[in-house]
Structures are given as structure tokens and as C-alpha cells.
Amino acid sequence: MYANLFTFIAALSLFSFYEVPKEGPGSGLPLILAIIFFYLLFFLLCRRAFRIPKTAESTYRFSSSLTKASHASLVSRYTVVALFFYSIIVCVFNLKGHLLDLILLKTSSLALCLAGAIFPLFLFFLIIWYFSFPLHQYLTGKNSGFQNYIESNIRLNFTIIIPWILLSLATDLLSLLPGEAKIYLESNYILSLILFFTLFAGIVVFFPYILVRVWKCPSIPENSERKILENFSQKAGVNFSDMVLWDMFDSSMITAGIVGFIKQFRYLLVAPLLLKILDPDELESVLAHEIGHIKNRHMFFYLFFILGYTLFSYGLLKIIYTFIFSRDFLFNVLFSNNQSNDHLLSSIAITILLLFILFYFRYIFGFISRNFERQADISSLELKGNADGIISALNKIATAGSHSRTAPSWHHFSIAQRTEFLEGCQQNHDLVKKHHKRVARIKTGYFILLILFSSFFFVLDKTVLKTSELNLYQKVLEKELTKNPADPSLHFALGNIFYEKKEYKQAEKFLLAAIHLDPKHHEALNSLAWLYATTEDMEIRNPKDALIFSETAAALAPKPHILDTLAESYYVNGMHREAVFTIKKAIEKKPANIRYYRKQLRKFQKALEKP
Image (cartoon, rainbow, N blue to C red; front, top):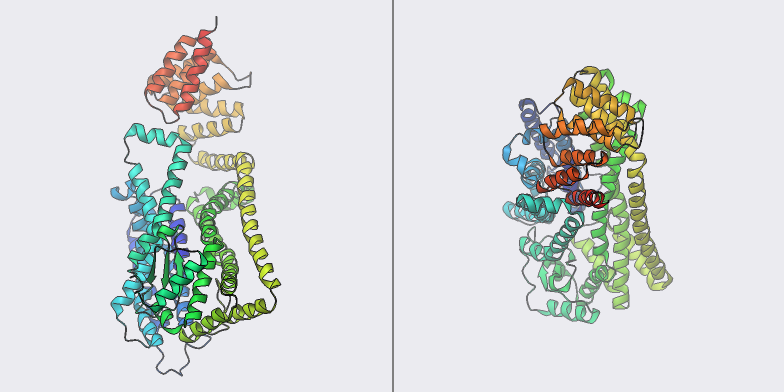
């Protein structure tokens, strides 16, 4: 499940961050042929990979013996192959660009991502499940139904994307708000943040309730096993909304888990086979392990870990785009021969993003998860008073699941390592204290890293990254200008970049050039007027020309920001009454940043009231 979770995160990130080439999607035939080719190739690869050996003794493609663990490993491996093929379809054949040509997908981020990321990935997964079923049946020794196997996989994977679907649906619904309410929400950053975290918290709290119903988990019957679980959980001081059977894949699962952050929506999930093979002491020990996750607040940490990914990935991509690509050497390589390489830039950034996802979830998460699982094992020892029950349970699980005791796991230690550590803890309690301190250091270290990165990125974004970003845009525009010297929009864009860099003489030069090429370019007129009215460079400052250019721009396009420039021009020319009147006209148009306009109004009114 972890592998599929990270695959969905990677696919959604890849699809969302992909920059559609400016030249448009072009013909859809190459995309159609690519889709047919990669799905057919994947079909053939999976058919070959999941063949059942003719005899139990025959040599198979696994390096170790054929087991459930090796089957799961093969499924994970081909999940990665599916992501690789999907990445090619998105990055090389511009899937997103073609989908954006459809009107429905232009207006709904949910519909766009469902069509461009979720549905294509599920098709790859269906091919894996189709061919992995006979091998799964062979390994479990059960004459299970194909429909149940596919349905179990769909239900398991569908729950992964439910939180994202709910958040995306909420975003789409907010975009349907009336104009005034939408503008107010967009302009109020704090309100938007509160709304997002309220929605996110609601999904986090209620999601377990949805999950157990999507997974069709019935309550554990009122029997001796349930009584054992209830008595032990009460003794440990942990309450559940319900204790349910985690009955999927024809009861072949041998596991348990806890979902939920508050007791009203917290559920204990236990596989039926686990109830069957464990004795009361072992069952209590497994429950104690799961309770250890609650008492040590591991799920809360994982929540922050997912949120941290958003910050780290955004910051990483911003640094790549603005700092690295603004270097002269890389820029000359990426934009050689006067060719536009937006597509190449996007592909490089996405490649780095996918590598980061691999590192962040496979290695950082894997390291944290292994240590959290070991701490939960220790909790079983502490709650039970000994580790005999959890050691015995782990060994039974390994035997029943045909797992090798020494088989490594990227998010758990091997069963041999876990049992050896628990045996050591029983003999030397200092190992328990050391591991609790180790986990505390891991948590503290992660949060310190998150805070330091956030602070570093914030400072960098306001200084070095901003300069690098402007330098990159400047170089791209100058390259374009050599190909289209008569394009006023390029001169205008360069003028604005030089203004941001406070190179006002250059800004004036390019804005005048834009106006010369297009005397009715109201945005260039407006920018030049603002430069003349507000610049601190007294050689450039020219209030009279600012008023001339701003009046012309306002006559052409009386937009709020252009009226603001006109009001500012009136103000610097001492025409305070006209400034107040004009900024009020701008406010009547309900601009997005209404606070700024009201601040301008107060400034002009204060000047008007002075004798």
C-alpha cells in the first residue's frame, strides 16, 4: 500500500508541475500511438513477469524462493515501471496539453487530474492486478475469485486518493462562488489559510470513518477474541469507535492496524487470519504494538511528514528553476540555437522532483518508519511486561505468510532483527531508553530541518532566488527578442523585469520601445507612468509625464490597477482631490487586493485634508 501511495503522490505531482509548452499540444496522433504502445508493452511485460512456475521446484525469476513477499516485491517493481511509462506519456507526449483542450477539464482541477493522472495510473494497475492474480492464488493456495481480488485492490487504492479528491472537489466548489465572495477570499490570505486547514483537519478526522466503509470492514463479532481486545484496550487506556475485521483478498492478509486521530473515529483493524492463528497473549501483544503507535503519536508525525513534502518539493523546484537555471552555462546549454526549451526545462525539473520523491519517501520515510515500528514493538514489551507474546506473534506471522525471517523490509526491520532487538531489550532495559531517545531525536531533527528549510527558503526567496528568477526571465526574454524584435509584449516584459531589478534607466528604455511599437499598449503606458510617478531615482522621476501616460492608459483600459496609477500620478502632481475621486472609482470595481486600494485612499484623503 505504501508503494501505491507514493506512486499516486508522484503521479499527481508530476502532472501538476508539468508545464504545458507554449506552442500548443499539436496533433493528438503521437499521443494516441504512445498510449497504445506503452500500455501494450506494459501488458506484455507483466504477462511475462507474473508467470506461474510449472513446478514448485522450478527456477523462477526471483533471486530468492517464490514467496508472498517476493510476489509483493514484484508488484512494487512493476508499479515503478508503470510510473516510468506514465512519466514518458506526460512529459514527452504532452498528455496535459491535449487534455486542456477539452472545455470541461479546463474549468475543473479535479476532473483534469482524474483524467490525466488517476485514471491512466489505475489502468496500469489493472494490468498488474490482472496478471498477478493467478500467482497470488498459487501462493496463497486458495481458490479465490478474480473479482474479489480486483475489487480488494481497487478499494485499497481508492482510499489513497479520497483525501485528494475531497480537497480538489472543495477547491472546484470554491471557484464557483459569486464574484465578490471569490475576490474577497482570494485577497484574504489568512482566511484562505484558515479555510484550507479547517477543511484538511475535517478530512483527517472523518477519513477513517469513510475508509472502513470503503474497505467493507464489518465489526468483529462478540466473541472471545473481541473480549480480549476490548479488555486490553481498556486496560491500556485507549478507546475505539469500533473493532473491525480487515477482510480483504479472500482473508489472505495477516496484519492489524489502527486508523484515526480521535477516539470517536478511531478503528482497530484486524485480519481474520490473525485472529485465527494467534493465542490470547499474542493477540494482546499485537494490540499493544498498535497502541504503541497511538501513545507515541506516530500518525500525527506522519501527517506533518506529508505536509512537509509539499513544502520541500515546492522549495526544491523553485530553487532549481530560479537559481540553477539562471547560471550562464546551463542557460546556454538549455537555450542553444535560439530554440525554446520550456519542455526540456519542465522535464528536467520533473526528473529531479521524482528523484526527490524517491529519496524523501523511500529512504527518509523508510528510516523513520523502521524506527517507529521498533518503538511500537517496545511499547508491546512495556504494556505487556515482557516481549514473549510479540516475538511469538511475529514468528507465527512469518510462518503463516511464508515470509523469510531475515527478509529485509524498507519500512520495517526484518522479523529476525525485530525479535533479536526485543530479546535484547528484555535483558538490557537501557536499550529501551536509548531507542526512545533515538526516536525523540529523529522527530526533533525532522522538525528542526523543516523550520530551518522554511526560514532559509523564505529568506532566499526574497533575496537570492528573486534576483536569480529575474535574471532567468531576462535571459529568456532577451533570447526571444532576438527572434522577434518588433514584439511590443517582449519589450514590455523586459521593462517590468528591469523595474523589479531597480535598473530604472533600462526599464524606461524598454517600456518606451514597447509604446513606440504599440502606442495603445495600455499596460506599457501604465508601467511607465508608475515608474515616472514613484521611482526614487530623481533623474528618471517625472510626475508630469506620469500623468500624461496614466491618463492615456486609463482612457484605453480603466482597470483598477491602471486607475490606481492614475490616482498616484494625480497625487504626486498635488492634485489630491482628483486622486481621491479616481481611487474611489478603482475601489468600486472590487479589485482583488482591496486592502491596498483602501490604504491608498487613506493616503490621498490625508493629503487632501492638509491645509
